[in-house]
Image (cartoon, rainbow, N blue to C red; front, side, top):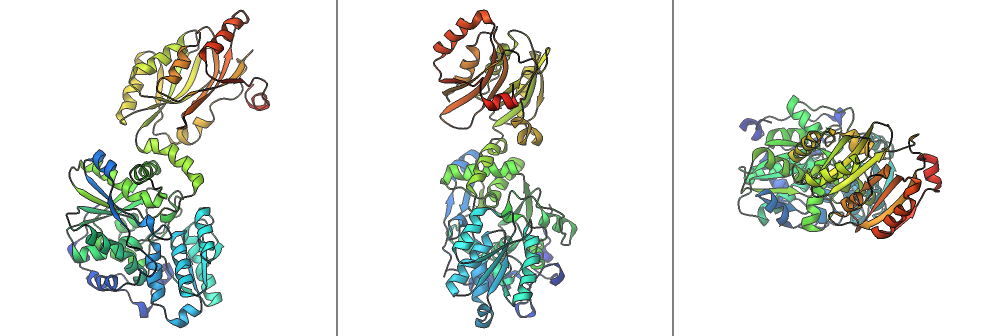
Length: 539
């Protein structure tokens, strides 16, 4: 996107607050017009009664891989595992005693809620927290543990916000906005103050996740006032890009729906003041998808052994995309790891999709002839493609002439998938590259199988084998090509032992040879031919 104009950057034009669209800025708390005004508010912000000065540390492995220095501003290490308590406490510290006595209320996807709840406990006042029903349980539990009164309403922050305004009017509470308030923005701006103090050398750009815009507004206001040569780059997900769309259109837009994977940035409409500041001060924007975010969570884990929530990894995902797009070398980039309130159950999905985000796994649908020896020939071909490991192999007999195989392979670069597909096709195996197919990644891979009229006299076995390079191919290659494989399912789960489910049609005259095969293979196995689930769904 184009760089903001110098006139706008100086703050000479301002957009009036629009209360009907969600701003809660009052005449008493009139929005400052310039970055200089915000600089003073940030320098005098009260945050360290509850917040800590988080570390700014290099991501060494990621830096080596990208050929650029990547710095992580570890806001995930705050007492509530997010930067949000900075703005919440600063706002509440500026309330009058009478306003605090009435109690406070906020709407939040989770992290601001924890900041408000912690601040309220510190100040001895009531806190009502309205959260979307989609909020991860870990955030709800954390707010309740801090003494917040949780009300669940709606599917997004915007839905929760509307309900919070109703409760505010009904109960006479004081509203603490999560982003569209000068005191909140100033509190978040202390993150930038710390970055520039901690790293006084060159910084080419700071990458900041955007939900409603409070964090990037505060960071941009401080950095552009102190070191305007540093670029500020905003990051949103492709399915929650309200700020990017607003900047492009020159006015705030409201999204009909938002993606919920990055729940911390799932905002349908950004704030009036945050839009004004972001449009004036932010240099560029990057949109990232779910797979890129999952890969970034893994990158940060490998460097820090910490697990970020999706919103917390947006900046890292954007740096990787930015470097790949602009072919940068030798630069210094900072990312705000702004949250770590991750539901443990979500890690399964993150691990699954990280391989795609890293472009480390390719998926294919391969058609092979349903004839003796073709299965083994295909397995041998996989070994000759240069792929390091089979990650998935699904097959169910369904046709007398051809077999459809769903196969996953590790790759080092995305373009390797095309090379592997061409190698399969040259050997007569029709191949479709499914690596970028969301239907295949999210659903079809789990649905390959079912009943088959052709699976007569089938016996079903579960094998366990050590998950080491070549183990799966050894298993497949050791089978007699005359024994028809009617079902095959394998998925690498990252464990020390792999598990295969195999349906085999063995001629009666080969019964002894098959028993000899099972014995000499030396892999633990269980026959599941009489299993109830097999009879119900596969037989």
